[in-house]
Each structure stands twice: as C-alpha cells, then as structure tokens.
Image (tube, rainbow, N blue to C red; front, side, top):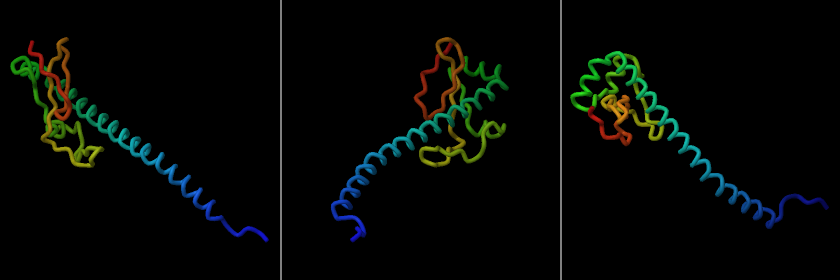
Length: 130
C-alpha cells in the first residue's frame, strides 16, 4: 500500500520549520524596508538642499549680505517651487505624508566660511556669523 499523505508528526515538523522561517524573515524584511525609507528620505532632503544651492547661486550677493547681517538666510520650499527647482506634492517616504512648502532650508556659514544648507527637520548647527 502506498502512502497517501503526511503523518501528523511530519505536518507538525513542517509547521514548526515554517514558523521559525517566518520569525527570522519578518524582522529582516521590516528592517530592510525601514532602511530603504530612511535612505529615500535622506536622498530627498539632499535634493531639497541642492535646490537651495541653485537658488542661492542665482541670488548670491543679496543672500550673502543677509547672512552676514543675520547669520542665516531662509529659503522656503515654496521659493524653490516657484523656480521649478522642486516638484509639487513632495512626500516623506517614511510616512507618505505631503511635505509642506512652508518648510525651510537654512543657509549659513560654517566655521570655514563655507555655505552650508540644512533642512529644518534635521539637526542644524548654530550659524557662524563672520
């Protein structure tokens, strides 16, 4: 007589093995997804700060004068949008929420008198006033 299926012990062994595999796999998938979203967010912020660099390069003398007086110049995302340096409906890849065009990028000098750009949601340094 031929065997028609699995025994109860074989089924239990398969269920236990699948349970172990799922227990190992799910946290790794969650970690990888979080890392991907965090990296996507970092790239988005870099692109916003790069847009601010272009904005500043087009208005350099005026903006440098403001930085010298106040220590920081604020570029709003709406300013970048008006010049088509960024697109509408930017979304935070971590939360999928729309990023407000009222958000700011701070433009300031570092200690080496190089201009730095810092999106307001990041840990921005204290501006150096020359």
